[in-house]
Image (cartoon, rainbow, N blue to C red; front, side, top):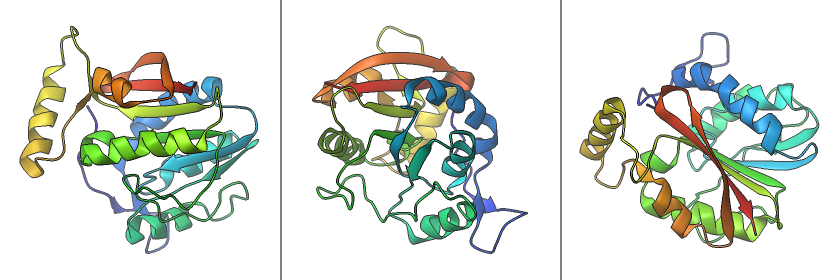
Length: 208
């Protein structure tokens, strides 16, 4: 289950730097997948970077890649700017709304999006998939991480409770099914589905 806890102030950063507790629990498991599925060089766009902790952590450990964080929220971009300080392979964050038809970037060699689909309207996931189709070349990866439902696979009780909590907070939120996301991923094939700790999944799509 993903952690619905809001950001807290980071103890070791500037005033704008935020900390998402779930990051410490999932970053190494995600990194293990990224080491295998990302290209060795190129530009990686992270959509909905949140606090910026993930992109900073991955950039330090995958220095051959250039990283482009993004988030629609000014507070998130301020936090990202704090976390990227001193990292030469992390660009300044973009103001990017996944649901928007126009993105302020024209291409990428890979795209990742962590824990966005369930805490945003379905339109954001559709926009993410459409934007990725515009930016990525054939064979390039689109990596999604978070709690997802699967047809014919029992859902953990904790994920069901989390889904109910999300929908109570905002009816437009909620866990998405792998089948719904894959059906909407026009121009992509689902190359890998990887079970992750705490009932999360990694979905690796490849541009056709």
